[in-house]
Length: 102
Image (cartoon, rainbow, N blue to C red):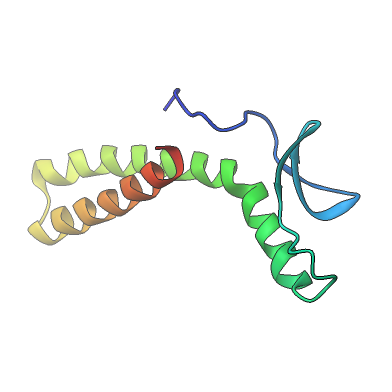
């Protein structure tokens, strides 16, 4: 998937603001609610999840490609159960990728 539109580069938690996700000098997201510590744990967890999003997407795309390769082998000589399970897994992965990229 060479046509990904998100900011390229390493996303990271700003060491000076633990609820701020950056890529280089660019702010990707600010997960602060502005309510001084009331939701600190949740806000930091949201920032970690956002910072990991590009790597998660990359892993999901790779998993999809691997499953498609295995599905080809399964469909060639596999059981009906394996075919249905593989199709459902691919559908869920494709939906998640589309949600992140469309």
